[in-house]
Amino acid sequence: MSDIENIKTEIEAQIAGAPDIKTLDEVRVAALGKKGRITELLKTLGAMPMEERIEFGKKINVVKAALEANIAAKKQELETKLLNEKLKNEVIDVTLPCRPEVQGRIHPVSKVYEELVAIFAEMGFEVAEGPDIEDQFHNFNALNTPPNHPARQMQDTFYVNNDVTKEFDLDSAYVVRTQTSSVQIRTMEKKQPPIRIIAPGRTYRSDYDATHTPMFHQIEGLVVDKTTTLAHLKGCLYDVMKAFFEVDELPVRFRPSYFPFTEPSAEMDIGCLKTKTELKIGAGTDWLEILGCGMVHPNVLRSCGIDPEEYQGFAFGMGMDRLAMLKYGIPDLRTFFESDVRWLKNYGFTALDFSSMTSGLSNNGGLAR
Ligand code: DAH
Image (cartoon, rainbow, N blue to C red; front, top):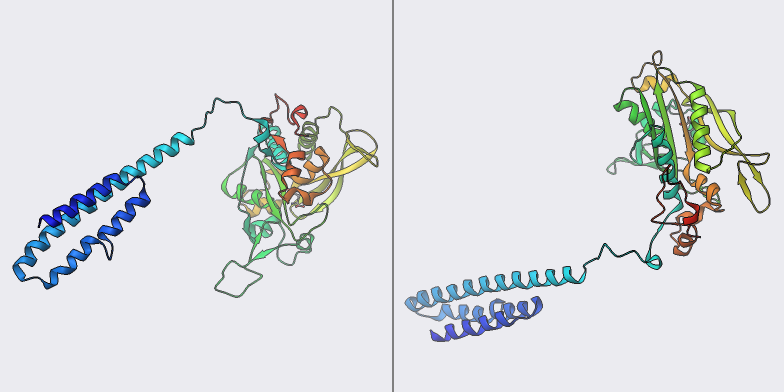
């Protein structure tokens, strides 16, 4: 009997002395594992006479339970110690100024995103969101683009099978949204006018060259109210472009165009000077196409339960990557998404360059170049 007490004392000493969780686990296996000392003792029970077996069995089970509790307590203690050490070592002094050489960079698209949100927020726009994977109703049908409408071919759509247990079916398939215009629909479904939103986000089309990537970024705008006119559209976009390109004078022109969800539709160009080595926005006699826009088609309002006799609106959509290329002189869109740190160091912005309408949008002084 005293033998088992001795074993207990011995194992308890080992538990108490275990410096880490690994050693503790070794102690546990050596005592309570399949071939552990206590387990081996338990195995001898079968060969004992009945009375002895009961008494010894009790004792050994009490010892076993005590050791288990002991191990669990020690484990907890070691874990707490480990955590405390980790917390102590990983402490960050938030009062230290950051070191420029280890600072990350803000991607030019994120920068343009922030700049546009700052501009539109000051004009009273809210930011709206929608899903990247859309149904065809929100991406096309409700935007006055029913199946077989020729305008569907304007966009090289990626379709997504929405039910993996079934064969792909083009009619019911989802799409990865080809345009942020889908957020117009999602907004109008939820909210009655007056509406004034922008919807920046990712969009997808099967296209790849220096100015196209399969994933790109658009920003959509939608204003719906009782007295919204084409003049509001023009004034709004003119102010936005001047603020965005940070120029006092900006020639603009609106060319008639076609989009199924607007009537009339237009494309907006901004004046620029193109030389072999330079592109200067706001001067010269050349034109750059910058966005699509128009007055919201009555069918679009109707498909969202808004009465076009009472309300009208304007909408616009533009490519944020393209805006970044133009504003920050980046020649190839594909490089945006290659995740090359050298590129980001060159074209990115420091985290402290906060965009605001009062402190400045791009803070060119803070440009990481
Ligand atoms: N969704 C269009 C595209 O991807 C852009 C666009 C044009 C959006 C006119 C609009 C608009 O809201 O009114 O090409």
